[in-house]
Length: 54
Image (cartoon, rainbow, N blue to C red; front, side, top):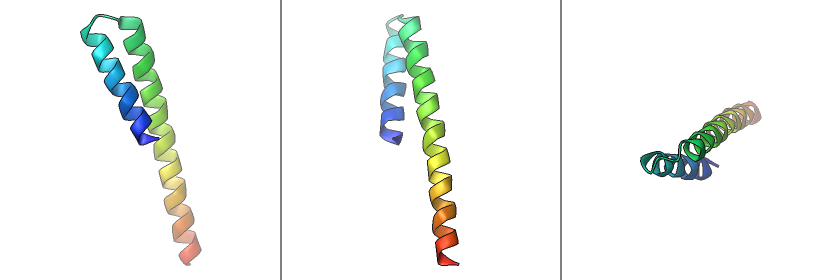
């Protein structure tokens, strides 16, 4: 999932360089959402692994 976030971030940067503001904003928004979903899933996984060991 982090790979998809980075892909959308790169697409947003390339679109911004070429002047496609709408595509750049949409791609950056998708990248931001995917990154936060990744963070939430990562934290949940860490907590579940810690609780399993106890």
